[in-house]
Length: 439
Image (cartoon, rainbow, N blue to C red):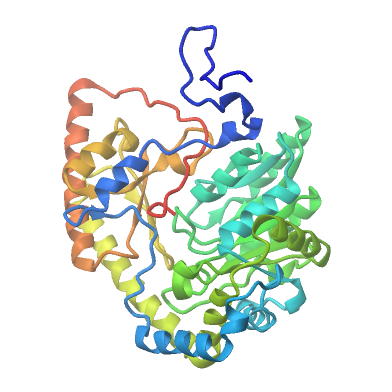
């Protein structure tokens, strides 16, 4: 037997990973975030983190929930702690259909597949539909976790720009026409229509039918990711794309933003034929989602005023959004602009020419404030003048202080740019792997 040693490339450099030549080709798309290490520092209490997409769970009735968890163990422990179906607990699937009805969706529980968070659903959909080299259309910017899944399956992402009304239909049509002329296979449009992550905008209702029609004309599936749809600050619930075109839309949902992210319970609603393949994919990925977690969610929905709880979340996040927008207006230097979200967790900020938000991030952390730089939300290296600021977790007072610190760092960067000129922005190829603090 030969000794297992690190391989030595012709360049003379030594690879320290002895398994390097054994990895599948698709692992080349699994790139680590260059800023991940910074978030270990950003999690320190003296640093105001405006980077994380972590829900604020302080409003949850923890005493009631703890009693219900104990009841589940005492009364149904032999079921809750046992293997279950890859399809998901039947009663929870029925309850999920009731939740989706708030967005105009008519669904049968059989077409719902429960997943370990909606990220698992997105990963399975990509695995089912994308061969290496296939094209996925996505908004620019887009959710970093989605870009990671697309890269892992070697799909090519084509970004389509948004404005304050969401995805621009004419630009979507243009992108699909160009892909067709180039002989590229577009498998689906991935979209976050409501309170977008990271951009914070919402797709205008009058655009939704047009976008669905464009995708039908080009024989392109629509993957609708909607974790924030019930978190509109004015209580408005928008009609889901799935409600208009059930045969051509795969819908992703989650309890992470409206209940508890740590339980990792999400779902996929798919056309019937796709659902069959999703169950098979779920079996191969996890065998079954945790029955215990599903039963906790189901008991909560059955016994608690979950709509009232969501209302409390909306009020909580609205106060934080207001604090964020007020602080941005007060502190950020001239030349900056930002979106004004009507729900969800995020504000998307654009800074003046000459400032690179990725290069600036270590200096911001030194000034005890953190954010998510824009390049992580593009698959093509763009976003160097953008940043995502999250208002969901810090208190309003911490948000204001964080923005004040950020503004001082920005002023310093702008002074440097004026003195020494703009530094060329380095293009970052491929998405950055998300950490729990960046999702």
